Amino acid sequence: MNRPRLQSWIVMGLASLYFLVPLIATFEFSLRLKRGEYSFEAYRIVFADARFQESFLFSASLAVATIVLLTLLVVPTAYWVQLRLPKLRPLVEFITLLPLVIPAIVLVFGYLNLYSSASWLPLTATPMATNILLTCGYCTLALPYMYRSVDTGLRAIDVRTLTEAAESLGAGWATILFRVILPNLTSAILSGAFLTFAVVIGEFTIASLLNRPAFGPYLQLVGANRAYEPAALAIIAFLVTWACMGLIQLIGAARTRAMTAPVEIP
Amino acid sequence: MSFIRLDHLRKTFGANTVVHDFDLGIERGAFLSLLGPSGCGKTTALRMLAGFEKASAGRILIDGTDVTDLPPAKRNVGMVFQAYALFPNMTVAENIAFGLKVAGKPASGIAGRVTEMLALIKLPDLGKRYPYQLSGGQQQRVALARALAVHPQVLLLDEPLSALDAKIRVSLREEIRAVQRALGITTVFVTHDQEEALSISDTIVVMNDGRVEQVGTPFDIYNRPKSRFVANFVGTLSTFNARIAESGKDILLLDGQPVIAPDLAARPAGTTLGIALRPEAFSLGESGPNRLSGTIGEVTFLGSIVRLRIQLAEQTFSMDTFNQPSQRPPAVGDKISVSFAPTDMLLLE
Ligand SMILES: Nc1ncnc2c1ncn2[C@@H]1O[C@H](COP(=O)(O)OP(=O)(O)OP(=O)(O)O)[C@@H](O)[C@H]1O
Ligand SMILES: [Mg+2]
Image (cartoon, rainbow over all chains, first blue to last red; front, side, top):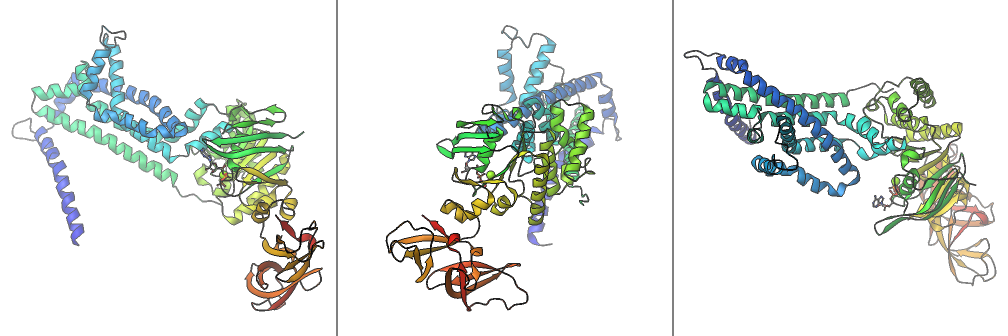
């Protein structure tokens, strides 16, 4: 093995240790609920906890709502920018990156000020309205990821010519968007969707300050009061996130295979 | 009255005018080509006709209807793009059916029309394939079928063959022409390839720098170019500087050798004129009225044709001879005499 190879392996090994050691330690700790033996008792307790199920279901439902809303928001926007306003692209990219720069706490205080029960749009007045507000907050948080995925997907197809081809065949904008553009973006939207799911499931700040029974606040609650269960929850949350990542990879790979499948051309 | 009337069209992008005063009538059922070098505004002119670009000035009439302000979806114009632009998520049959579905035609009618179009483009069995499973030539044929399925009034093609390799390019252009003849559809074809335009069109519009240089049949464009630009752009051309030998007589001196010229309109003796001749205007030997003697400087074997570069005292020119397998080919350094008809000579301004 030559020197540069060896060096890169060492760097690689150190990086892996940096990520894996805490993970393995947490996992190992989560198995030690019962004195003197390894068991999945902590996991059993977590899964049996009604609040776990409720909060996870709540967050998962909001994640789905977020994904739908975000898709309807981002796809037409990104499409329009690419097609008609390419000069605005840097500006739009900058705006979609803002949620990464502005802390969620700032965002939620803004919301509380704007939509308090005394305001003209009291979105914090009822639980349902607050859920809507929370979904909108999630949309903002996940915007950078969804926009980037969709934008990459749009760059991969010849949006302009496809649009013109459909136009010359008599299609209106809704037909073009839903029958031509959207179907060619499924894998891009799905990868954005899984990232969004991961973001929403782990989100704490907004849900907590809006006082909604989401998974993030539940994690925090358990973490503050128990010892082994939080470790188990951390591992579960980690697995959910990684399952999402894995699905993105799978879809990407399947799509690549389908697009390059060898066929006999007479 | 023309079927399509482009009435003094102009297109400006910012301060840059890319199509100037484009005025043209196209007869019903004609196959017209827009020919010109890259960037001369062919695509822009076609896109105005399709409705993808808004004309900055002028009007467009199709079959007597003013379509200047109609969006592309309302113009009933079929378009074929250089990049095929098939919808990747749809099969070949779905692609062809797209325009019919959008128009709300009944399913049974659509299926029949799709079968008909697949037969027209000679791909009857490929309806279930996806575009990525087709070769470039097949994709372009599907794009043609998709554009024609909706019975458009006009077919527009923007360099539809330039992404294909040479063999397919020739066979597909013949097929496009055959389909166009069979349907009798008025067609505008954009190309920068002069051979393509000459072989396929009823009428050629030669464009340069956003302006129409000449409109005519392929024969006229090739044999009677009206400007130096057209003469140079279409076909190969040898240009000479010739001097008028004697005022009042139509005789020119080409590197000292006298040749009869068409009407010189009493220009004074000693004036230098530009003249041009096609390589096929010359024949070997001294049979014609105008003769030139020189030395062969270069021989290029092109298959059925052998192109000779002939050196006069100062100037050189190209001539084509047919390949004759039984004879010794002309060789560099040979002395040669050639002749040509005065009427083949183009006077350049
Ligand atoms: N959207 C646009 N904005 C600004 N300038 C443009 C635009 N579209 C075309 N042009 C300019 O107009 C001129 C003509 O372009 P056009 O595409 O019509 O040329 P063309 O004859 O089709 O060339 P080619 O053979 O290379 O396709 C070019 O100089 C081009 O830069
Ligand atoms: Mg062009």
